[in-house]
Length: 63
Image (tube, rainbow, N blue to C red):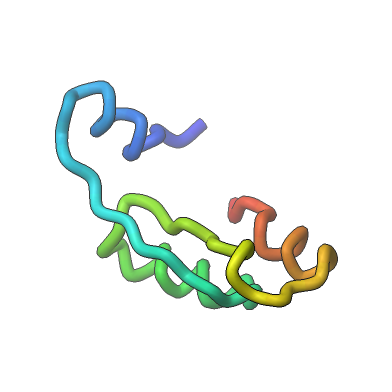
């Protein structure tokens, strides 16, 4: 299993950097992750009219 870099930083008391997205497009999350500029991405679905299907697809973790 690969190491959880976010958990390691939190346990060490180091600062983390994240971003918020308002898109239900899973590829956008993958692109942000591949850029490796952020430690986490927060998917904020409560402020947009997403269907449950779109929200479920976006919440699937990448491998």
